[in-house]
Length: 626
Image (cartoon, rainbow, N blue to C red):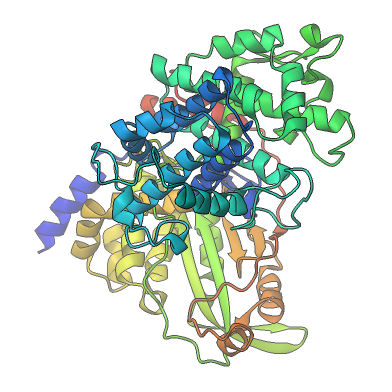
């Protein structure tokens, strides 16, 4: 048996160099250099969020088309549909392509003559996607009683629900339901909803704009690094379609004022890479924002990214000096008022990817939790939810874990304003890193080198198999005694924590990569860029480990922790895993501004794609094929 684990463990670490932990400063480690973002409106969109944005874009655009379509309206709307089928990220692209390539659907798209025809086409495509993804769901509207199987199109079957020759009464019934869902009485600008992204309510102007930007930014960050001619043509066609048929007339009027600017048109035509597409959407978004700021409509907004301190005049198009002053996308040797150097351009790309892209892609579960460590809390017992985000060889993460390890037990006790507070602890530990592949086929890159990745695989396997009473914390605490020796200490630490090393190594070899990919993806989705970061009760964010950490946690037990009895009294639902706070996270701990260069030892590591990048590290880790 001893020979077995020695052989397996040697194979596990054979590719790992023992990097000294770098990229760390002032009590935190970081790969990107920006504060974490947790408000759902400022996090990379998940598959469901992107889907909702895309349907909002398609349905609303169709609903507000002119009653009778001329050739430009029809072609523009066809281009919007084709772009979805060509550029939609992840597995959704193949499904949409499968549906809109069906010979009957093709005929229905070509036969569009009115806005009602366009609305019915989107309605059918939406029901077809639903029928494939959720075959148990009823078609919309469910009052029709149409079975989902009637929308499983793609092979030209004549048994599918067909729009051509549709019974007039049934057509009216469908259109009435579609308009009730997507058309705002009186027009897009009549009502501005108080809450963002309200489900099952017609979008207003703000919601429509947000849906379009979500779609545009997201397709750009997930494009292939070197898109095909068809993909590039589809990408360009979206902006011409916005010019022709964007549903909001005021917004469309603003867009038409600047879109034919010669510099902007030249930049659109010259896009040839993913990075070019990202920068074009970034510039366009800032042009729209600058216009609103200049008109006084959005006095509290800023140009993105805010730390670049960009000036409104750099994005005012048209203006008397726009040809000279506007920010150009073609890089210059040194950053100046109207252009970025290649390095600073990469930083902008990284900031955009930070906002819109999830490590490992959009098709992943976005969950990262160990099996339950403790028995369910009693109904009257408060619950303390604590998430800790780390990198495997971050020395400040190790120091923080050393400090709090003895507190990580099922019953958490502390003192707040002279009172003893107790709560059932739900502690979850997550890893932060890079995935240049996908969730299903990861290409993982740990910030501190290959040895960190091996250590993270072992530690997440310990979390998976030794969650009871947080036994895995003992293993991690031992590993963190000297982060420069991770993962060599694993046999010693497994023995100290009374764990089966064979089990850990087997898990690391068989499942470790998937566990790490899931953890990286979840942390990315949560906007984590600095480690250690703690999030308490999904409300309080703490970066680093301040001296008053215990007081901060204890205050959250008093202020935001809720017992199951309290939750069920409010909702009538008794659920063991409660997240009670939807308020924006409150920041405490160390506020950090990073301007540093990280030395990376292995040459291949320099070529790594890095989605959210600190200034020096971003330059060294972005792909060289930009």
